Length: 114
Image 1: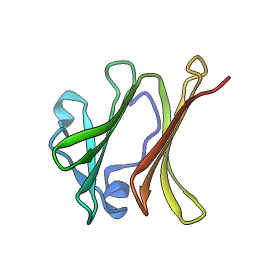
Image 2: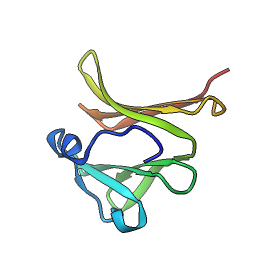
Image 3: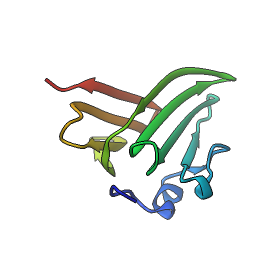
Image 4: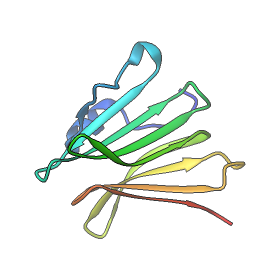
């Protein structure tokens, strides 16, 4: 991989499973976290397509939020107070900030840094 990422076991230890989009042969690593209220969070990264990341929030059968961004330099699990997040860092030429909350509820913050 062209960027740092937690290993698959770390995702499993935090309550994620593999999503239907997971395809390691194609360099697509995708994880799913399901919630009691029926919501789902799908977190996908790929060393191809410009070191990309995508996040989907799904309610029922509908995607209610989606983010795609290239230029990933590293991915890390972090804890902020009681929230557990995935923090995505980008290459110096990508002025973006991305934090994905997976506990206690799915959410994300994606912003341009100025």
